[in-house]
Each structure stands twice: as C-alpha cells, then as structure tokens.
Image 1: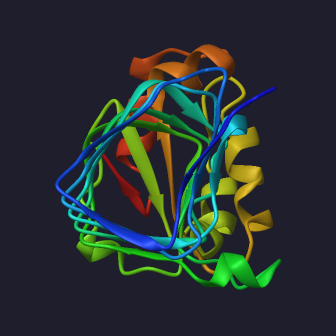
Image 2: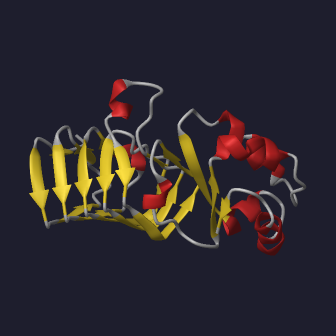
Length: 204
C-alpha cells in the first residue's frame, strides 16, 4: 500500500523537507505554512499534491526535472527556485476550480533554475527574478502574440508563437529553455537567439 505523507494544518520553520520517497504520495496542505524551509524534490509531480498553503522565504530545489506541476493553490513569497522545471504554472488562476484562486507569487528568484514551458499568472513580474539565457521569457504573451506570429522564425519555432494567443486570461509571462526548444523545433540555439534578439516582449 502506497504511504501518504501529509504536511497540513501547521507551520514549519527552518526545516529541510526531503520529498524523495518514490513509493510515497506527498500532500502539501491544506492550511500549511512553510517559512525559511528547504524543500528537496526528486519525485514525479504525479506523486505531489499542492492543496493549499504558504511558502515564505523557502528554497525549492528540483533534483530531477519537475514536470507539469500547477502551483496555483500555493502562495509563494520570497522563494528561491533551483533545478529544472518543465510545464509548471505559477500564480493564481481565475479559470477553473476555486482552489486555483488561493495562491499567488511575488518576490521569487528563478535565476538559478532552468524553466521550460513554464507560465506565470496574475502576478507582478517586476518582483520575479527570471533565469537569463539560455532561458528566455515572453512577457505578456497574449498581448504580443499577433506581432510575434507575423515575424519570420527559424525551423518550426513559429508553432510556439502561434499558441500564445490560446493562453488563459491572466497569463503574464511564459519561459522557455532555448536548447530544448531548438532541438524540438528543428533549428539551432544560435539561429533562435538571433531571431529573439529583435523580437518585442522578450527577456533573455
């Protein structure tokens, strides 16, 4: 029987939490506050359930790539992210179930993280420290979608920008990892960078 490990209905301060048991299911929340903690993840996102709570001044380290994890139910403030994150969504969502409206993100630092296909919702991006190249971020993707679609892109990269307008309302930024993108989109990192350097709304 798969064990369930719950962090709920309490405040934890200054501890190191290692969510690394691949035979367990982990639950963060409801009603949990982690303050000044270090969280180590080396499990698949399917075994990690973010129910609701606050992560304040925490370091969040993904040992393997943490894929397709929605953080919408968690309030993240002053946190530092390290490691690889693929398809993660940060910030609260106004679409969908009520739990996705509980969270938010501010004053967080992703400069030591590798983000690919990660989105930010309903937050002030001036408080977010983003990773630099070889990651790149499309700011206000819905607003820049039409202009970016009109541009010439190497390989199949245009497909990425065609999808921007389909982002849910409240999407304020979208971050990708250039080497991963170039390999999938039949181009080179150098060609992709050259095209991005003249495009509007791109942070590198």
